[in-house]
Image (cartoon, rainbow, N blue to C red; front, side, top):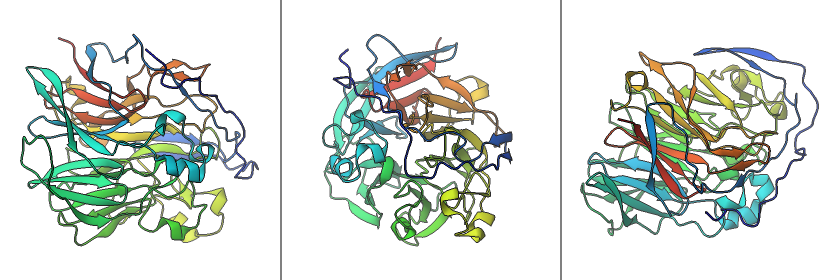
Length: 432
């Protein structure tokens, strides 16, 4: 297979210059929902930039645990970013990536991205797959003319799409293969954003009365001023018609993955945390999301630990910061989230959560680049464990085969994973 990055994309490893490299001696032990974790002091290690080189898969495949098999569900896509599965089993894939104009404005180094993420114009459409006689068929473009689509939802005869600048609703009947009708914009959203924070997600609430819409921050750590962050780093709540908008929870830097816990119907989110504080800060996390709660960004991190870049600014906000439930590791770019609501997998996976880690640039070693499983018992999380690995080809050379991002549960109970830099959809099912 031809390399995705050709010629070889250079690897940049150098100290970030924006924050002061003064070591704060305050280390911390933090009690989370699954045990105590240790947080180093800010700048205990230098902030570095290490870009991965995406070389493609050739004959390699991702690696699943014993008892599972991995197959190729879809190929030759264009930056497949997120996946949604309809009740009839139809699989919808949003194709979008960082716009070239955004890269020119901010620069790749500031955005922390590789060429594979913005090479060419964003496709800005949704592709439909349907399984026929057990084999996935690409039925082509389901919806086009969008503005960086990410989240998708079918609810009450409407197909909702969360684009970077707004939430749209289109008339929809189950089984249709293309939408040509004009959609209605229900909600304006602040567009664009630093470091791929253009993604917007949408799900229906556990009681089926509201929609939740997630919006990432417009900066790494509020460095452009908080006027730039209005209705950002939030999860919004609205009625399905777009009315009664309010901020449901805030201080969530980039809550790209949102899902409903099937045990108690509570909202959960996977959150991509801030950069430039060192290799081990700040951990990405998986957390339950409480109504009107504040989770720290940008004034505090992982509970009431004041961000050195905002020292003394808002002690009131630091004091009200909640500790997230599960640490997922710093700079892993934990983005996709799906609770396992099927029963095709062994019982240990039932009602647990799968989290995709896209991998990041702000660590001296490659971290992330895998799919985690977080077991849940009676609605409470346990310790994360590796589920789908093999994305890192050569750690020393910083080479990866691909980068997992979107995740969903297929109608047959298999796991679907979008690999946006290799333009594939992987399927993990039980090996009979």
